[in-house]
Image (tube, rainbow, N blue to C red; front, side):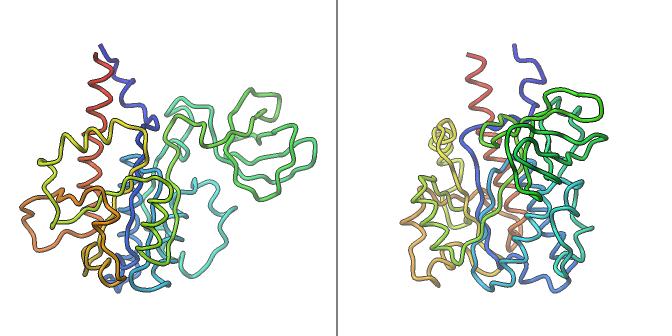
Length: 297
């Protein structure tokens, strides 16, 4: 019988899920505060459902592309490191409206029972590096030089007088969910070609696709593997196939499936941030169902 903590603990679970969103998601929000809130919802959805990567592809303006990238990247940084890592700029004026992520690398380490911590190097030489890890004492890593201002992930090994002795950790080796990475692309085509080149399984989310219930067994099979999956979303004006046509490409050539995750939607259109919550909740259900059923065998 599974203990409760076995499946509520936020392990990184393969296959890793990424999402791709268009830069036009903020185009219909003239109020900058509303833009920030919209981006915040996407960041929260990504964190809730343990999205590993957020791809932003440009379908309208480079200004929107960079704006979304900056805010999602800022949101992912632990609050205690933001002022140290990100200089103020006008685009960050309303970041106070962003919701807290509360992911394992943002909160007190006791909450998720981990000795892992994010930090920024404040001094370093060939013998040791001093790291601000947002606690009452600094972290000290011996044996390597790390440039000042670098963001690092550390594991607290032990407490020693007025410091914590830490080891530098490769994020790829962490088994707990540790937030998302943000990438930007000049076009949908560039994003799709990057995905195919790196062996992602591409799934398009569109009301023109096949209903999920017709493909459930196939999607569950994909979710039982260890490949990376990227789910592509359209924008407020154009669906993914229409964005692809504008770029002179065929979305069906790149996608393993085009799926309607919200059949018989009761509204004229589903906003991208709403679709992300709906799609990721269904993907998470199917993925976790695979994991739990396998553990119970």
